[in-house]
Image 1 (cartoon, rainbow, N blue to C red):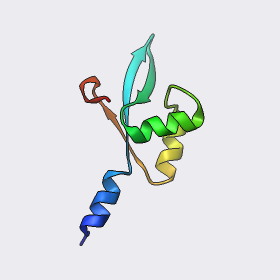
Image 2: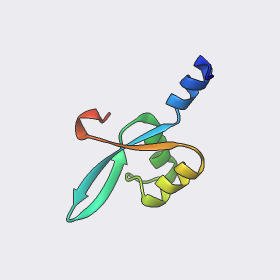
Image 3: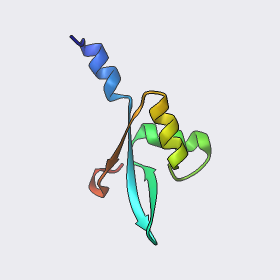
Image 4: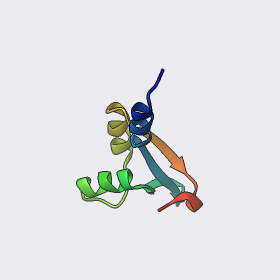
Length: 71
């Protein structure tokens, strides 16, 4: 059974990104503070496919959200 501490920790491990389709190419942009931290550390404005895979490899849950749910 999960404790409140484990549930709270899991909520902080969610990286939310917004997908925009530009000229038929999917581009991902940060939609929460954790995603913003990832792009700031990488010194870029977009969340790349490589970043998404790396985040997943480290146990983060990456979710694509609609435009109305962004920052």
